[in-house]
Amino acid sequence: MKKVVLLLVLLIVFSPCYADFYSFVEKIYITSNVADYVSTTYLLQKYPTRIEESNPFMKSIAKNPYLFALVKGGSTFLVVKSLRNLKEDNKTLATVLLCVFTTAITYISARNVSIGIRIQKR
Image (spheres, rainbow, N blue to C red):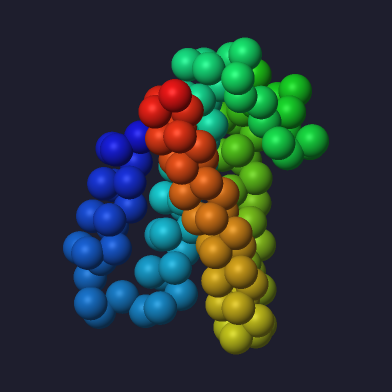
């Protein structure tokens, strides 16, 4: 878990200053999805009797790490590709949607880490 947080911090700190805002947020979105995958699979494997996936659509998928990676990676790719296509027509809308999606997935990833910390203290 510490590696995922470190990866996110390094991405933010060392992101090139010349990069445009959209690209920067897109990198954070992708990294947060990876952090969500890693933290979810870690918690489900380490604490299978104490933790369960709260997303009803992913509940049965998350138990299989390979299928979960495929679905998570595929959905992340589709969102990124769709928003890039939208960006060609309406950059403002694409940027706002990307910020909303990034905020949501970053919150979910941070919540996973928080749950992991609380469980390890017990």
